[in-house]
Amino acid sequence: MKKHEKNIENSAKAALLSCLSKIPFLKVIDIQKAYCDKDTKMDLAVKIELPDGVLRLIAEVKSSGQPRLAREVGQKF
Image 1: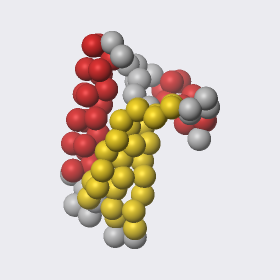
Image 2 (image 1 turned 90 degrees about the vertical axis):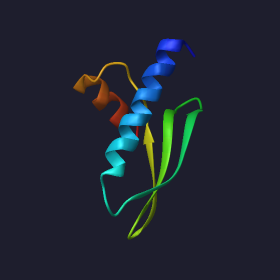
Image 3 (image 1 turned 90 degrees about the horizontal axis):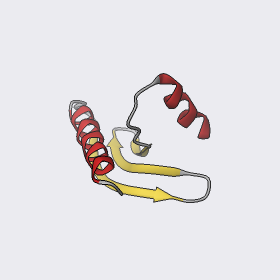
C-alpha cells in the first residue's frame, strides 16, 4: 500500500471513530483493517455494541467522496 493511501485510510478510520464516539449508546468493541476476497473489498470492519446487540459495520475507503462512487460501493452489498 502506498504512503498516500495509508494516510487516507488512517484519516478515514479516525473520522469514523470520531463520529461513532459521539453516539452515547454505542460502544466500539473492535476495529480491524483490510479484508478482501474475489468479490468483496473492505478497508475497515468495526464491531459495535448497541442496546439491542452487536453489529458489524464495514467500510471501503475512497480518496474521493463523489456520490457516484458511494452508490457503486453500496450496490455491492
